[in-house]
Length: 119
Image (cartoon, rainbow, N blue to C red; front, side, top):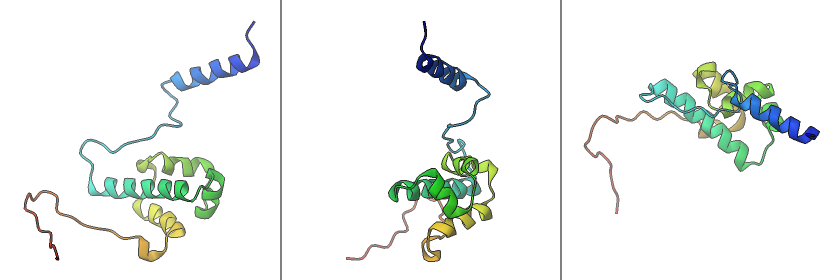
């Protein structure tokens, strides 16, 4: 006879195997991401790093950025299509000082090295 714990675990596994279940999936960038996708992804990753560095629960972090838990989880799992860049910037500004939030534009197509080194 199966115990309640075994049944719960089997139900959990069944839910995870369901192809319609998208919860708990950590999203990655597409193969050739646009600069907008990269910027949004980087913000999501920084918010996750902030949570880990400050040992915050989902509830505490959601309160800091004024989001529901499901909305916060969409950020933490990098579901970048669900947020605009300005909306993600608003959440980042709630966690980081304005001096810590910046946009860097780099030309990655050039193979020439344009770095300046100082001795």
